[in-house]
Image 1 (tube, rainbow, N blue to C red):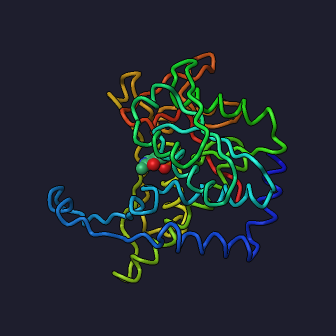
Image 2 (cartoon, rainbow, N blue to C red):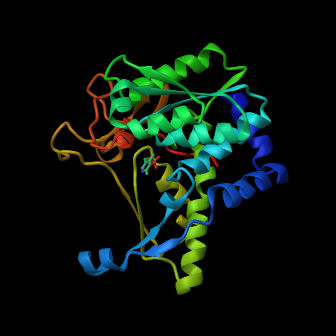
Length: 292
Ligand SMILES: *Cc1c(COP(=O)(O)O)cnc(C)c1O
């Protein structure tokens, strides 16, 4: 982890790295993504005018490609020969397989068997993109088991391989790196809103799974006292039931997969199961990016 942090700190502000990433954002991802006025949704909900930052229009269909390109470039700069990751719904897997194919580094994705069956189209895409897809059948055969499996594979050869996490979670420096790569969302959105309306939005909001799209949007607005920031966690069947994934609302500092974070846990510090109908939102813990 120290080595990854050191390599990242060495390249993050270099012109070569920034230029290559920004060029890919523009020409490969199709950035900037538009800010769209959702008129009918605004009418239907009555009151606030709602604008959507259209990360869904990025190549591969989500914000994930932003950090995957950053991670794949870092892997290239570090001379790594294999990129390893887990995926839940398959969005991170597809984005990473795409980024690795672009940069030319083999990629191995660990995915729970349950999620493989639920998210067939993404599984097919990952295979077409040439990634080595590893089905994980242990435990609940979902995201958390895929994370364990991917970490184990990474630890077999941390010299030649690199782990590419899918959100602002995991050990330092991953939350920091993913936040930095995703911060393009907020920087664009703030400028786009300024250009259109000559003001800041009153509220910004994002769903919080692991927190990458939220951190990407929120980071640019942290100094703006007039902007209220609202993160939305999966309440599942309700916060009074065990079936939710509201880690920040009801969790406490603990440890998961070997790193410190907010986690839903029992009296003995064992992580509790989480629930959401969205595979990509069942992340049991939230990494908080404390480093800059
Ligand atoms: C991955 C993903 C999420 C959840 O992950 P975050 O790290 O919280 O952003 C939410 N929505 C979409 C479309 C995703 O691909």
